[in-house]
Amino acid sequence: MKNAIIMAAGKGTRMKSDLPKVLHRILEEPMAGMIVNNVKQAGAERVVCIVGYRHELVEEAMKGKCEFAVQEPQLGTGHAVMQARQLENDQGKTLVANGDCPCVRPSTYARMYEALDHADMVVLTAEPEDTASYGRVIRNAEGNVEKIVEFKDCTEEEKAVREINTGIYCFDNESLFEGLKHLKNNNAQNEYYITDLVEILRGMGKTVAAVKAVDWLEVQGVNDNVELAKAGKYMAERINTEWMIRGVTIMDPESTFIGPNVKIGHDVMIYPNTYLFGETEIGNDVRIMPGCWLKDEKVGDGETVR
Image (cartoon, rainbow, N blue to C red):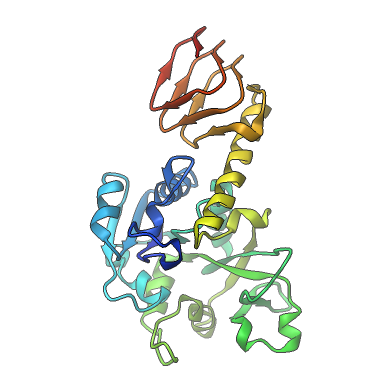
């Protein structure tokens, strides 16, 4: 059994919005919805969203797509995972994904599930151009993860490490819930941190491995509207590239925006300033003329849309 827990409880103060952060949209899809779809494509059979701020809005938007667990109050990342009590007695693999990282590829999540065949915990890492103040992933001689060190606690030697923690993990489910019992909140914030599970599980004789993201940009987080726009541009370029490789002619990729759930046939030509969103389906031999906005529409074979 493959499970997934999506951390979706935060307000997202820097969004300057009353809407929960995970409901802000990229290519007309709420971030939480994109992540649920991606983990399911990676093989997740059971998905639990950890909700908190205005949770009734998230539950309404995601109804029928996943299960829910409410985190109130919010006492850290480890505390959030503790709320997924419906998974506690399951066997199998459990992915823990961030609700504000909508660009992670399904193939990346799938690699994390696969890596658990030889480990009890897997950390998704990356090497950004600017490592800034990210937590560093410290490996041992065998290449497994020894610890995750927050930047403020790093030695000069550890700051020189370029591999950073993305905050996305995968666990053997029994090891996850066994480790959670040992989490402590004896820190300045009185919170439970999921990163502490690295040393807890290693202390229990378990193996912590790492999978590195191929593309740093896919693990970028969204904390404000500037980052939301950057993630949207990145996703639009990635989706357009995939469709062009599959034979769709896109006249001007920079002014064409296609949602992740859109389906397109063959011999399709898309002209500039076009927006295809939702569950839109485009048949074969179709022309989409400039300036069209389609959402949840079905275009038959041979049609021209003006």
